[in-house]
Image (cartoon, rainbow, N blue to C red):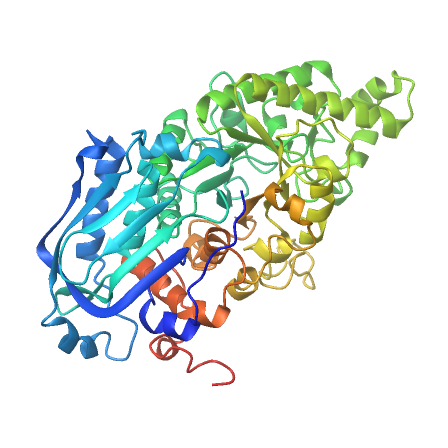
Length: 559
């Protein structure tokens, strides 16, 4: 599954011309000739594609729109004025052709994006001649064609109405180093309107992130309307206008799929479930118990009574219903931050555990194993692969299927222990990939408080992460990829874009291009990606003063 990305040698040579491409392609050959985009430019589909799926047609239209409306001046002093002498006599490109290799199956981009992660085919080649003859994107799937369109759209700048590239001929052969490249968004601590989620999906697609990990519910609110379990959102959402209806989910899943993104939904259990008590108070232990810090990591306290057979059966049914809403092959059952004190103080739970005649630790472990086994059995019956947080593997000796995906979040130091147990791993470590770290404390009546995962995680720090650190070569195949995570105690739609972008692009390149990228060489390209996001309506924050962005390397400490 893993391969070492083959990067272009000589980073100074790379950044002098390819300031645009993010993530960096596997292999890249480029020239120094300018090329203009013809006023009659169009994207054609070869007969090998047959009748193009609707989402591929829409992607073509969207790419053409970006080319005409990005209006991005090149990030150099003069914003492209110095390029005029090069492009005013350059050839015009009139056509980009999309073609599939012989024998390729023609599916929609959505169908390809929602395949199991090990089956996704995102590879493509891109050829852009300097003489104006047709450019070509070739792939073996429509998803690969879509990734190629994304790369193609990053080559172009605008100066006084002329749309041009500066580095043709271009030859690219590209495929991701890891099949999973994600972004987690928590929509339970604070609600995010659908429009903001859709805009985030757009930005994800521009940097080839392919997994939207939707942490949709938590103890603070339950905004997901699930058929047959509607009461959870009716009573557990912040309000009737802060609910994701079944139609909303269908819209988000469809929008994501058309952009090459799968939606992995998480219903965290048995912890982080206090909101269920709003509809089913008898299902939840230590509901709103005080002081909350004795019973939960965050207020309000409350965890479902997983040892109660009726509650366990109800929860398994909940996951069956959720599975029908999300076509992804993966569903997360969570499993982090279980507070055992909550259950030790809960009479109904202790009555059940004591009746086993086993010591508390053993009875607790067995009951939890039965509970997780039930939810995962429901997922398996629905054709899903379960995902869990690392505690399910490292803190509890549960019987989990070999194909269970484990997200390591507490520390990257825990990856080795999970790999030693043979599970596939998704990197999500708080010490590298938590976007909320460094925001200061949010707990009231505690002015000295800081965020628990200080310091702020810069894009540079995330970019230097080694996905294979401490592993043996025979464990490399267990690494599926990784993701940035936004927990939203202090975030909402008002600051979504600035806190995510462009930092989350760092892991997008890390897990597409492979580890070992040069931070100094990457900065001009990330500037370009961020500025292009702004042109497309995403409020990506500056990485440096504009003076620096227009003068690569001149703001380096040792320049």
